Image 1: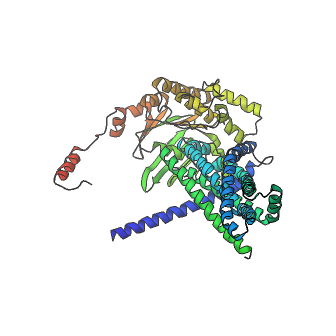
Image 2: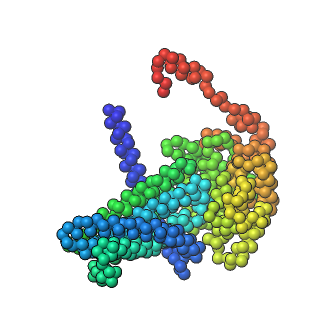
Image 3: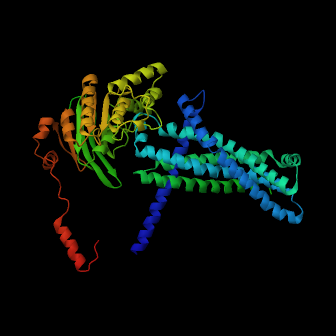
Length: 270
Length: 269
């Protein structure tokens, strides 16, 4: 009986914690949307805009080599795997369509989000968690500075700008890798390859990919920062929050991708 | 009861995770007064301080600072409240990503429309007051513990607050640096006539800088008075604190009982 009560207590506590987490997330998201205008150039606070620019360098420019390398590898893998099957039915040229559609609709935004999640969600969480432990967040509050506006909003604006840009680069490098494979495997010239790519590319696919990127940017920043703001205790809590930020943001990015893909699949009327 | 108190606490009670940390604390602090909050570890003095600086809301009771109740006021009043209270944290809480100058300029840039040249001048003046005029370009990581605490005081002074709050100013400092910090607090008191609240458990420091002292024990205020009143206080806990008498570390009868049960094969709980 006591085992049953204990289990019920644990389930109840877990449910309460999860509801609290969702509530904190909703509040933080709303506050960050309200604070976003303060980070804009010309109309916002110039120090926030400078902070946002610094974040764009950190989240975007420094992640560029990793994202492009991942895209090239994934492009080659997709092309080789596709070619080995399509060759058997004499449709190896369809590899171009496979890589183009695969990247613009799916792999470009997803790979970028996973790379940025691993690099930046952990960095956000560690930075804010350390600021909590060293009382810097408390100091901000006592100076009437809103930590969401000061710390989170510049990161959010930066992510909303650079993650879609990185996704476009990821699309480009992934497709180019497919082109390189086709050149080596079939001797297809780059001219023929690009004509085939432009025939396959659809604006709708690019736009849906960018929409996904915006959603992924939101997930990465909001989860990374919330995990940092929830740190209680000492340095060990910072370590735990960093791990939680990466795991939760990566998982939620994939979950959101499933949701978007289902939605786009259904609305295409296929 | 103090006439025209700047800080007024009325029956302040705080509970963390079902455990009561403050039990109805009532205290008045007069304008220009230096009040030192004493107490052992876990006595609730830092919790009380967090109520005074508006970082937490009490579960019961009221905290009024300069006529504003930070737990129940408009956002505008809350901003006014935070501008009128400067805080020097125990860990200094300087922003590591900013230089010392930028740390001190931050509240001025956030809350005033002063031109950059005026802000730079004001920052230099605040640094000069705490004896760090040459350290403005350095990052917090490059400063010693005592210098960090003085830089934190300079930042707390940035907006010329009416109330200055220190959390454990001498903690972790050697006696000479701690004495320098006491001297700085006395200088600020003489120069600006600020109301100060200082949390500490360093007795020599407390008796040097305080106008009045208050002592917390297990979340209750057990003594409030001037230095002389405090030294003649007969409350057992106050005497124990002042005379540095340790609590018994272990209860011998419980230890004996534990071993007896262990030897009899009863698993210890």
